[in-house]
Length: 245
Image (cartoon, rainbow, N blue to C red; front, side, top):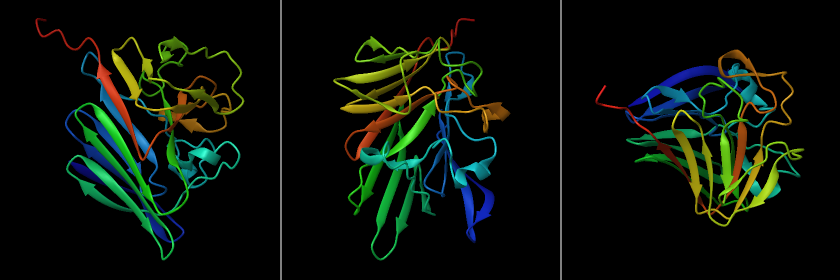
């Protein structure tokens, strides 16, 4: 099921938020920059939780000061923090969204697919750019708590949130990255070679995120994944519902 919500007009063009609902998961994105705004998954009690940081005021996506959900060049992001905030055309699929930007010289296509328990993001372009998204996750849902007690394992080694993070820090990956919460939600990223992480150390409590909460250190764990043309985010719901009750 697809829902389209008009947000505002920017540079004479409508900015819409597109939401795809598979019955189990929901995913929302703007046609401004093909920017991801919401990923909603069930916890082990089958309660839906919004696990992606987004701005409370959607007008902030025009400049995107925290790069939430932003489309960026992975290879150059830490040096040149440019976001590709173009107006994309959106084509809905039964289980996903296709965002396309095209001029006489530029072509960018971003495809979001939800297949089983995976969010699959595919990038295609004629530019010499290695695209990726800056995604800040908090598995508690709408930032009910900070991420200190959400365990992040990098190749089975626990991430120390207290180490120095000036901006996004590079971590070579041999196998996988996993983020877990006691509510049963796990996020697993497999088949990657590099990841850049930040636990919100550059948030300054100036801009509000989910449900009007201040964005601060440990509000979410930011991922910028370097893979091939395709990146897969797998969601596991551990525990499930006790149907005997």
